[in-house]
Picture 1 (tube, rainbow, N blue to C red):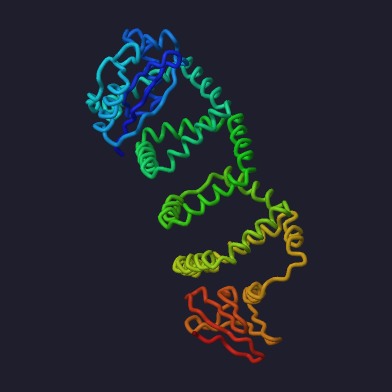
Picture 2 (picture 1 turned 90 degrees about the vertical axis):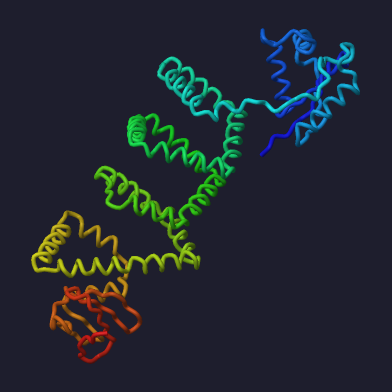
Length: 419
């Protein structure tokens, strides 16, 4: 966006003398430059800086004459006002020139030059190696952050910057560039790991996050942002790809498991999660997404069933049986399971699974001791699994060949028919 040009007027209150000028910045930004130049040894010794030094910056008032799209318009107005108010007369004004001769600055922003940025970056890095300088800088930053007005100003400026798509794209590109460098990535990772070992730092962050999370507006903002990001298919694909083949350490799994168990001991937390799950399922979009995800995973589930069928050897079943016995023989395990299931009625699918795994399939008092598969003939109940129970129809799968069978509830002895 092209800059706009401001024609301004600084007036000495006591004498009424004026100074008119042009700037592409704000009027007060240019005034602060005048004040800074007047206090400098190189600020000049002509009328206007002399008056600022003599009377002080508070002895002047400031007015914007107009803001113009082009420098030509601003030059014309400046020259007109200097002539109209006779500001080149020392008794009426501080201007020396007749005005209207401003030209665009020939120099560009030095930050656009890579060599300039590299030079300042090297100076900053060398300065940061000094421990005393680093301590002073950290202390000054903490002191500024303790000031509510300063903190509010920084946060408002950061929010305003982040609303710009160009700024977000630039920040994202810079972050990707930093983390794509293996050496830089290793250095940052090691530094963050070392910092995280400090218990006081973890405690401060925990307290800060908990305090933030008490704010309902903050929670709503984070939730909306998270939902917006996670609804994108490319983000989900990246996360899924990044998690493939990665396993958490035993210590991490133990810690996460303990924290999860502790949360679920709280009745209020369980009730809250139950309400959240119900409200989610009432959303048609969420329900459809879940159904589509299950359909997408069906091939992998079929591959898993084939793998189980291939592993269903007598040796494998013996090992599984031995492992199950060891679990049930643990002290207190049976009691805990009994207490957890007390008063709970197993679902129809669970009951049918139990009947199949026992080698018997009870139907209205009738019993089928063995199951028939067109390929394998008579097989034991351990080689069948319930796939679906729908009304009076029961779908089962043979784990040896992955064939699906259905069985309708009947009082007659009837073999299983291939679909």
